Image: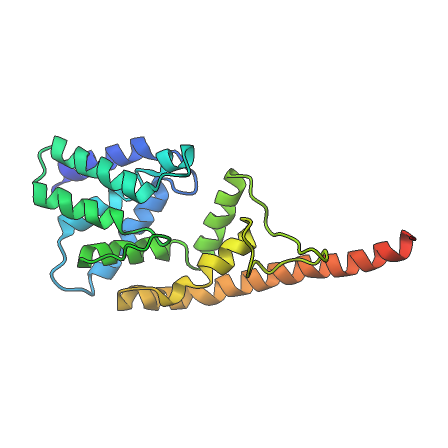
Length: 226
């Protein structure tokens, strides 16, 4: 891939990114993660990989405006049409489309090609460790979702069985479980290095909040008589 082609893809990506939790810096981190992973793999198609990384989140705006849409599906079609309009080979455009379509953690469409697996892993690394905690909290603030939920008895939920969205629910549903779901050895090793930071943050935050509720409700019950 030459610099002109890279800039074409980069400029299109920048024009599509409106979400601060999924901004151009997230895209660059995913790209750099992917290049790190790719060094440990054989026969990587770098044209497909770089294009897929740069364009993987260009459907975020549509999903944000309409949550019924999947940004991976929308983005894969947008990327495909963009690449064809700029004279990329159909085979390359199709491979990029499939990479983007299968990069999402929540969809039951596992990546098939090597490039798709690298993109999947590179994207998931950006929700691992401290970065994953920071980005999740940022996104929860954007969509006005709480840090945690309380149970019927007034205690703080760990998020384990919650259906209502919150940071704790997202941690238990996704962040806690992603460390065993990598396709490449390099990504799994990087994620393992970051895991303890995320675990300690979640546990510390839960302890602080739960302690405040337990102590506070006990004191309140003493002061406020039936």
